[in-house]
Each structure stands twice: as structure tokens, then as C-alpha cells.
Amino acid sequence: MRTTFSGISIALRALQAQQISLDVTGHNVANANNPNFSRQSAVHAATRPFPMPMLGHTPSGGQLGTGVEISQITRLRDNFVEMRLRQQFHSLKYWESLQDGLTQVELFFNEPTENGIHAALDHFWDSLQDLSREPDFDSVREVVVQRAQVLVEAIHNTREQLQNLRENVNTNIPIKVSEINSLSARIADLNVQIGKISATGSLPNDLLDTRDALLEDLSKLVDIEVIQDHANMVSVTVGGASLVHRSTSYGMTTNSVANKDQGYEKNEIFWAATGAPVEIRAGELGGLRQLRDVEVQHFIDELDEWTLNFANEFNRIHNEGYDLAGHGGYKQGVEGKYRLDFFEFKKSADTEDAGEFAALNIIVNSEIAADVELIRAAYLEGGLPSGDDPVADFGASGQAAGHLNRCLLQSQQRGHLPTVGRPLGKRL
Image (cartoon, rainbow, N blue to C red; front, side, top):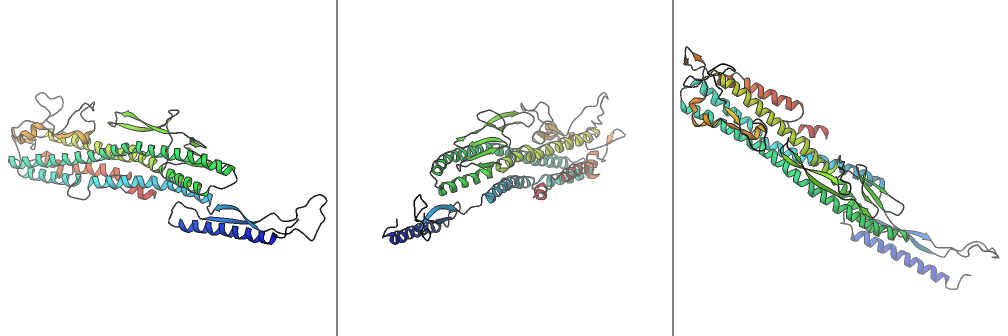
């Protein structure tokens, strides 16, 4: 039956409930600048009324309320919005990784500036024009060699910068994998704590906030799928394979895989337990892999291909001419005619043929650099060298320039060099 002090009990419960509400409000205010905090709310509910229906109880006018209590402290957070945000973080960080890398590539080519390949090529053509007008002067020939060496150096620098970027990205991949392993282990530990508290009927709101922040960080690194069970524990998958399952985390590892075709050891990502490759489609890690394997490698391949074609075409026309001593006029299979290429490709232990990694290995022929009179810059008229210059014609007539433009035009149509930013801009 009701006690004499029931009214005081109701007042006490009301004060206690309001005190808890004030504490929750104070907690919200204290965390106003905490980006990982979710605002909390105290849910008020009526306490059990009196009297309760029972056998032999004489009905009265109705049940009498006994006051208020806090039934639960909840987080004001939308799980659907959280899921959508994580999906967008996958995409955002993927494209940001590509943008950062392609911005560096654009700087490497230095176009249009006086330090890029185009500028060095223009200066080289100018020296060939001068040579066509004054083929007998060694000083003019020396300028041709010097300009050619500047062009070669510009090609080397660009190739090395692209290669260094690729290697830096490759080195960064194990670091990101370590971050993923650390985050997944912390999420698994939080799952254990959250599961224990949830089993008592309470909501571990602050622990849930901490775990959500870790899931957000994880979603920026790699594309994840998150499933929450009845005990408020989450399972996280990457490419359909478990990264976290309740209290257990499954780590990733990286192994160096030899890639002779591209001249370096590639860090590939595998599951530590099974050794199976990890399927990654998005996130910062996905962007780094795309940058290393596709975007940067494309520019390296294009530069190598252009360098090889340019050198071969220039050498072909150079060998058709004659030097100051009247030697030249090379034709395959003709006795007494020998090749003297203007550009060569040095061969190293990493290359199987001299033309491999052309942009890295191109050099000016050391014989020509030592004796500029060997430059085959003339046709032979009546047994004597003339001022007509097939090598200069190569530049003046636009044969090499046309070849270069075709290479660049094809690259541009594919969305790459020289408009480095186009593919990213179009997709965004």
C-alpha cells in the first residue's frame, strides 16, 4: 500500500532524474569542441505505478503514479548517415591521393617553363637550325652537342622524379597497412568493452563514440563494410574478407614482389593469416595503389616510349648524312657504311637490352661528344660535304617535332601528358 511518505519519494525521484539530466547537459557542453563526440540525451520515463494488479486486490479508482526515472541515456546519432559518410570518405580519400600525386607529376614536367623537356627540345632545334646555316664551324657543332646533353638531362630528371614518386608511394603503402592493423586491433578491443557494458542493459555512449571515430579513420584508409550486431559489437570487412569480427582482428601484411618489367620491387598487400591478396578498391590505400600501378607508371611508360622513338628517328636521319670528313651515308647491308648513332642507350645490370628504360638510359654518343666533327650534318654532293643538312632538316621540316606532337597528342587524347590534371578533373 502507499506509504505516508510517497509524495516525498516522488519528489526525490524527480530531483534525481533532473540532476542526471543536468549532468548529461553538462557533459554535452564540456565536449562541445570534441569532433568525435555525439550529443547525448537523458530519456525520462514514469516509474512503476501503484497499486499493481494482483490476486485479491480490491479495485480502486485507478493506478497512482510514483514519479519519474531516467530509463536510458542515448546518443543523438543517425546510423544510416554514418554509413553514407563512411562510403563517401572511401571515395574522397581515393581521389585526394590521386590528386596529390598527379599534382606532383604536373610539376615534374615543368610545362610551360624554361626548365622542361619542351623548352630543352626547342633549344635543341634552334641549334640544328644554326648548324644548317654554318655546318663548317666546330663551335656551332659544340652547341648542338651541348643542347642535346641538356635535353638528355631534362629527360633523365623527369624520369627520375617520376621513378622517385613511384618509389615513395610504394614505401608509403606498408605504413598505411600498419595504420589499418592498429585501428582494427583497437576496434576489436573496444568491441569487447562495449559488449560487456551492453549486456548489463546500459549504453556505453562514449566508447561507441570512440569506436565510430576509429571506423571513420579506417574508412579513409580503405573501403570497408560495417555490420553491427545485437550486442552493439561490429564486424568490419574489406573486399568481402573479415578485418574485424567482434573481439578478433585479422591483420594485413605487405610483401615485396619483384617486378623486373618496371625495374623495382612492388609492395603488395596480403592477409596475414591466409596469405591471400587483399582486394582494395577505394580509400587512401586504394588511391596510392592506383597512383603507383597505373597513373605514374603510365607517365613513365609514355616517356620511355617517346624517348626511344625520338632517338631512333633522329639516329636514322643522322646516319643518312655525312660528317666533315665525308664519312656516312649509312645504308643497311652496304659494305663500307657504318652506323654512328647520335643518341645511345647505356645498358646496366637491370636492363636486358639497351633500349629498356629509355628515358633513364639515353645519352649522347661519347664519340660525337669528344669529336663534334663526327656529326653527320651534310649531304654529299660530288664527293664533297655540302651545307645541306639532313639532321637540321629533321628539325626544320618538323619530322621530329611532328613525331613529338603526335606522341603528345595521343597522350593528351588519353587524358594524360601533357594535360596531367584532366583525368582527375573529369572524374570529379
